[in-house]
Amino acid sequence: MLEILLTALFVITGIVLFVVLNGYLWEILYFSRTREDYTSYLFTSDGWRLAVHRYCPTKPRAGYPVVLCHGLDSNRFIFDLIPGPSLARFLTENGRDVWVAELRGSGMSDRPGFLATEVPRDWTFEDHLQYDVPAIIHHVLRETGASRIHWVGHSMGGMLIQAYLAAHSDAPIASAVTAGAPANFAYIRMKAVRILAKLRNFLRLFPVAPMPFNGRLILPIAHKLPGFLLGLFHPPNISASVVRKIVAVGSELITSTRLWTDFGRFVATGVYAPENGKPYLENLGESTVPILLLGGSEDLMAPPESICAAVGTGALGERICHIFGKDQGCREDYGHIDLVVGERVVQEVYPVILRWLGDKDQVWEKTDVGAPEKAYSSETLPTEGV
Image (cartoon, rainbow, N blue to C red; front, side):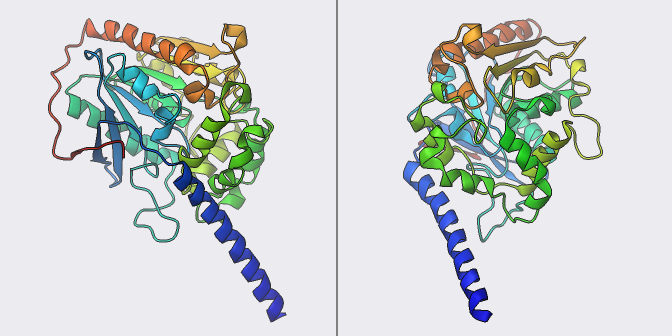
């Protein structure tokens, strides 16, 4: 009996080690530098250190600063992939002052390790909303001297700014752009996500969320998996090399199980709300901040119906829902990640974002007089694409 138990323990330990080493091996093999000019650090009111990467404009500066915020289990690479599309570089080449934020647990911000860790492994969606978002906004305003910022968020990064505006109608935001940010989880078509939602109580047993490690296991064939298994991109609209790069370095291995179970609850109940709280977007219509809602025609994680649900009725601010797909004149249909790093985003998606930012600059600049940009503080560290 003892021999059987020891054999089982040995096999389980071997499997765990293989999965962990496999995850980190792909990250090492695919790692490359991003091209920010500076990395600055800030502290949230609950003590987490966040990294914000600044991309200086290569043309004369235009309009308000732009914050780019990633989604769940993601980081700065979604906005500056080498080789691959870069929304950060596209905007700077058109005169925008860009700040790529990394939320707690991601990239160069505080994040836990696999074994030893000095920070908790159990942050939540509410922590991102209550602490990270306001800290990032105020940091960029302080560093630039601007009176407002634009916020461009992919997936959860877009969900966060919608929820923040719903709770803070007077936020210093010139406009918001969301890409693949679901506002109603009842519309989600991705079967794998619904299965995970049913297993959310089981996931609480793990010290770290196991999904990212599983994602690295299938990295070599990730681009060939059927949509119902992965569903985060539309294969005809994204190169296999970009998919592998995003899985290898654009996603975080160690993420909070509580954050994943938050999303499991959203999906299982169809209600985008905190536990025992009112829906996050209940008061979004009271915000006068204009919002551009971008979606992919074949996005199974955030279908067009889910994206456009944030438009609502009777909103005080402008709400525009823009779907990308063949029926809308695009070369190909778009999925979830494709909205940021797809094959033709430079020609089809990025210009839409750039025009929106310019239009909203003109609206606010009629009443706002931004202070001149100030020099960086001693906390701001120059980098060479760390």
